[in-house]
Length: 200
Image 1 (cartoon, rainbow, N blue to C red):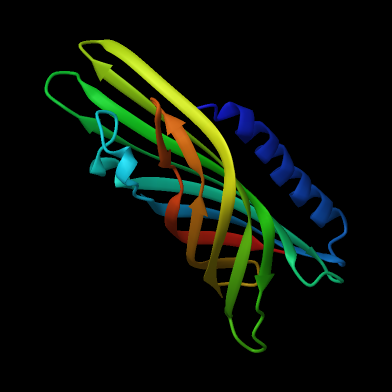
Image 2 (cartoon, one colour; image 1 turned 60 degrees about the vertical axis):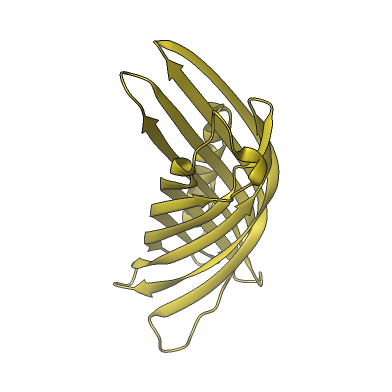
């Protein structure tokens, strides 16, 4: 999976968002969040075969996000990355490894509730999804990867633990059709996570 081609600009964008917001703190607000959860891949009848298994339908996932909003904007700009993966092992050293990476760009609406520590939010945008499968049989490894653009939509709920730190839950659905080993399948799905964040 060509993760490095996506992670470098994503990391630079996250850093840029943080620096610019801190430089003009009075006019800008924003959040930085880390995510730990799982991804349920979208099933596809055409995905059945040698390189695919229901074992990969549920994968562990990690994520990072940042959103920023000027006081004059109705919504926030948001950027997030999620990585997931799983390994299916067989007799001997034979195994199949599958992983996905998502870079999500979009807008987010935070619904501030006066006097409440809870903040629900909704977001949507474009997703760039990569996936890679590695198949190892008798110490011979074959692999294939692909990257396509799709869309995402999601939402969640945060709870302010302190003035600047929050915890919450986040659920996102993404969709992008990729071709791996000449078989088309969706590498998107539902990503459900626990979130720990910092807001300013």
